[in-house]
Length: 468
Image (cartoon, rainbow, N blue to C red; front, side, top):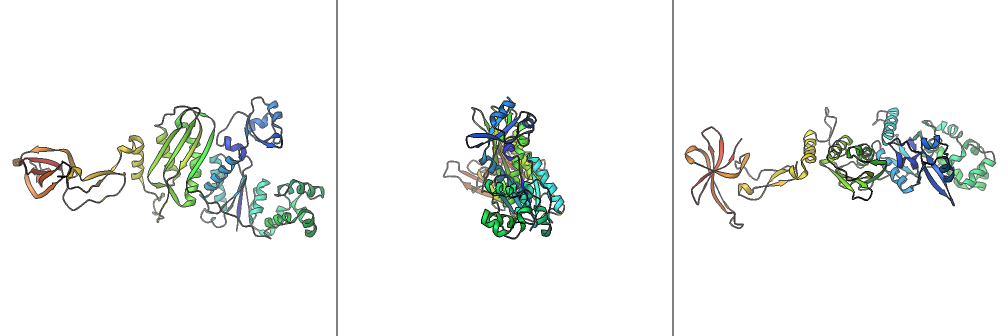
């Protein structure tokens, strides 16, 4: 097996500022006992002298305009799950490494993505698009890959024989051990994993416990490591707090793309599509604005979702500036797999459904519909509106015109040449709209084919439809 580890060192900060350059200095703080210290800060804060680990009072004394945000562990985990969903674009073997990493088995999918270099390039591009900074490292064991990613060594170790040499140069501070254990190792002169490995195992186990040896053995592949792979939830909900207030609906498209990338990965991981999603825009002291986007058929294509969202946002007026957006997709359905067309890039249905979806956005869903047969012999009541795009079969083999007039028009029999008929329709006595008619296919003087009937009660003739 071949594992890819992705470490997100700035995740506590990027949940507030990802994807957008924020000019104001921002610091994320974390409480340690009775004092709060800086956990992460952006470039503007770093340039002003703010350092990671600094007390928040000292940081605010250095920069009076420093924006301070508390660390949100729940939002970080939510972002990590969103990243795991996005990674589903490449492989289903994705495992969470809380609080700030992913472990992905890529050995089984390299040929699918045309090799290791191409896969890593695609993943780096996707992470940059979503606004995350990350360190990527690969190794033959998941824990070795994770230690290399933590150290910022972006290498790929394919040969298990070289693993001990490379890991031996890493600091013991990367191990998942207590601070007392790490401090004791350094006091003994073991500053690297290689120096730890040189000590007698029995003595190490007596002094520091078996967990230290087990961790190093897992990294070297001497002990197996079972990983639980990520399973996406049955519905998709992702929240993004915007770095600054947004006043125009079209300006929300960039931030929405960050969430749609995660939705696309979640759908790929589940081999499913979304029939509808909604973008909820939150305002200060105003009701939220809900933007709904629907599709004729379930889809998981990012560009299609973006196109229709752009159309919808262009026709949406915001009642107030937006500070947070939430993407909800509850109507997720499995897509039946099908063979792809040799000369078609997209396996989904083509321009017909896209036109239908855009018409719905521009004209309203209620203005775009299909027609299906209804169980009624009266022509004006023998149809019903149905969901646009639904297939329907005619009720029978009778000749029916393509164009039915809104109301029958009186005509004279002398101007018609009857070609077939009669077809007697006698119905509707139960609802007060009873008809007793004999229908014919006729030809007018100008050569047009008409659908006419004779009202049996009065003997009057009427035109009810025209054939193409």
